Length: 262
Ligand code: GLP
Image 1 (cartoon, helix red, strand yellow):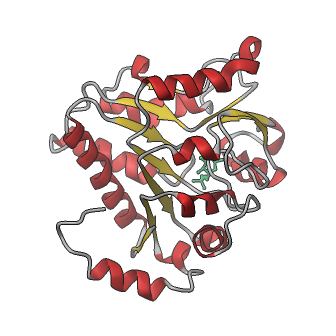
Image 2 (image 1 turned 180 degrees about the horizontal axis):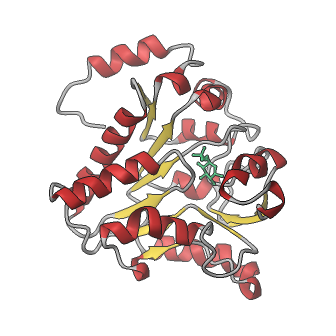
C-alpha cells in the first residue's frame, strides 16, 4: 500500500486526476473506470472536467465506467441517485455516453438478482482498471458498512444510522435518506487492478488510520485494502493526521523514483 500525505484537497485532486488520465491514455479507448460518489472525489472530477475543457485531457472515447453503489427506493431519475449524480458531476461533462456508464440497478422488481447481474457486467467488461474510493467516517467502503464480509460481492445492504446522518446533507433530512442500497462487495472492489483511495478532512482521520494501520477486520471494512497488491491512498493533512507512520510515508514519497509512478 502506498500512502501519500499531501498538503491539501487540491493536491489530492490533481494527483488523482493524473492517475485517471494516465490510465485512460495508456488504455487508448479501452479503459474501465470505477467511480465513487460522495463529496470527496468531487474536486478530482472538477479537475478532470477542467482539463478536458482546456483541451489538455485525454480522449474519453470508448471509456467505460462502473459506479460502486446505488440507493434503493428513490424514484427513477432522482437527482441524488448515484446514476444521476455521476452523470451530472463527471460523465456528461466528459462526454461519456450514458450507455457506457453502469451501476447496480435498483429496479424494485428485480432486486433479488441485481447483485449477480452487476457482477456479470463487471466480468464481461474485463474488470475495473482504476477504482476511485472514498471512506466513510465509520470505515465503510462503497456502502459496505462495518460487519460486511471481506469477501462480499454486489448485494443489497442496509445503511447504518451514522451513514444516513452523514448523507442527509444531500437530501432534505435524515428521514429522506433511503435505508437500503445496492453496493459492490469488498470482494468485488478487491478485483479492480488499482485502488485509489481519496481521504480529505479531519472527519476521516480516525477511519483512515484504522483502515491503513489497524487490524484487518470486518469492523473496519476499508481495512480490506491491506489485502490488495496495488493501493494508492491520497490524503490531505487533516485526514492523514491520525497516521502513526505519516513521516515515513512522506519520506517514501519524497524518495520515490520518477520512473515508478503511482
Ligand atoms: C458514501 C458513499 C461512499 C463514499 C463515502 C464517503 O456514502 N457510498 O462511496 O466514499 O460515503 O462519502 P464522502 O466522500 O461524502 O465523505
